[in-house]
Image (cartoon, rainbow, N blue to C red; front, top):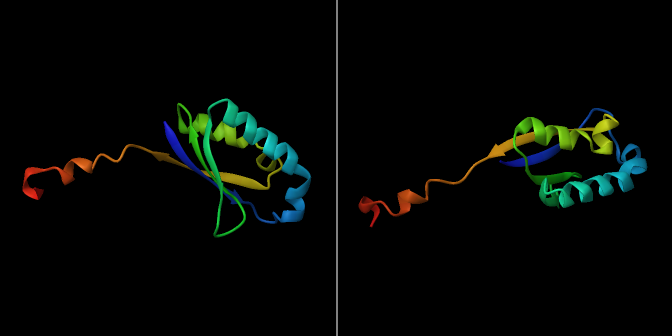
Amino acid sequence: MKFLCLDVPQPGATMEKYQPHMVAEARHAWQLYKDGIIRDINFRQDRPGVAIIAEADTAEAARAALGAFPLAKAGLIDWEVIPLGPFANWEMLFASDNA
């Protein structure tokens, strides 16, 4: 199953508090990518943070993988995990009344 995962900074989190964890954070992301859990990762443009497209059997499995990030373990971030599914409305474009 595919998930959109958005980091959620926790109260009191600052870039200064993030800094000691950033190398380990990148290593963890790389490992999740190699393991096939992270499919895509992007920096957010509206604020510091990331948006991840993840693949996992369940939302709980996705949360467990994300919860192992060093920033999450340090209590500096949490995650919003949004399940995604196929866009099935394409059929409406091909319905006979739309032709």
